[in-house]
Image (spheres, one colour):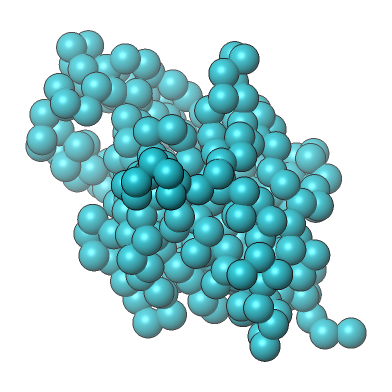
Length: 277
């Protein structure tokens, strides 16, 4: 039996999209039909095209599909993706590896030990954010899974240089900073999606790994995979970031998610076109 193909994909603004991120630039009559895949506080929150839903269902049968997200476990579990339920999921930027929906305690303990050894403590970063971020443009201070911190901000009020200054401060303490929409993330450098992906590849025996993502926090994941894709929007596109095994796609918004899934299927099932097109 051939070794499985492992597909580790970011979710938000890669496979699923908020209403604000859909980028429906075509005439209304030609807009794709959408499927809601996340409801929060009784409101529809995230979407994919119906075609993407069909493609993801096909992918779940053709490969080991691993949702890979910076979301907390609670935030991830709000998402109702089409297709077979994934055996593995990576949450909290690699801090939690879920196996059949349950945290792998050994993996989490290994991550915590590495963070304690290699970078400044979360409390120091939280204190810096509390004292340096202006309440004029900060809407929320959040700690995720006791692993990293993020702010929810008003982008139009955010000073242009503040994120750059924070990134320099964080770099000296073993942390990295990422601006995604209205959220500014401060994440320990050893807390990576790529390390968790490698662990899943080890457990499944996968010999081919595929990945996709749009943000700075996805760069390590893309570099660790045999092949990777990034959409035409997001931090990586804004920086014109690329690498030898990375394909920079022109599509933006929800149609980029559709294109990414077609690329995954093309690699996972060479010689076979997706049934949806």
